[in-house]
Amino acid sequence: MKRWYLVAYDIREERRLKRVAKILEGYGSRIQYSFFRCHMSERSLERLRWDLSKIVVPEDTLLFIKIREKCVDQIRLKNTESEWPLEPDSWEIV
Image (cartoon, rainbow, N blue to C red; front, side, top):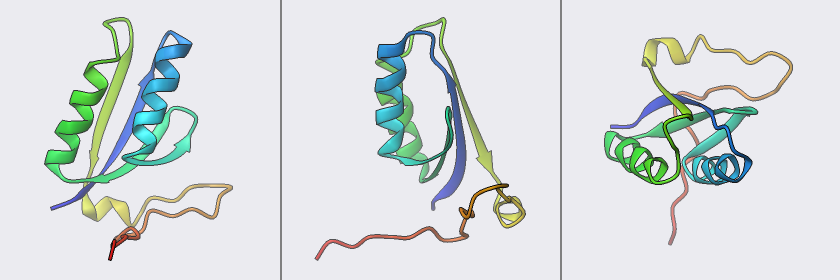
């Protein structure tokens, strides 16, 4: 079962910052400079944490916030057309 997560980071060194952002782009979409929204299963979340653990160092900060389904429909972004859909677009490779 997939759930929404808000992932935020504070990375102190530019090279690591770019690598973390690149990884997160593969899991979700950027909503602000250091904030991503990701629709993931628990397994994907663990994979993301594993991928990031190979890059970040103790001086960096990562924050993962699980968003309850009841709250997702109340989230609004100001000054943008983007919404948090209850079911994000899915792609099927045929």
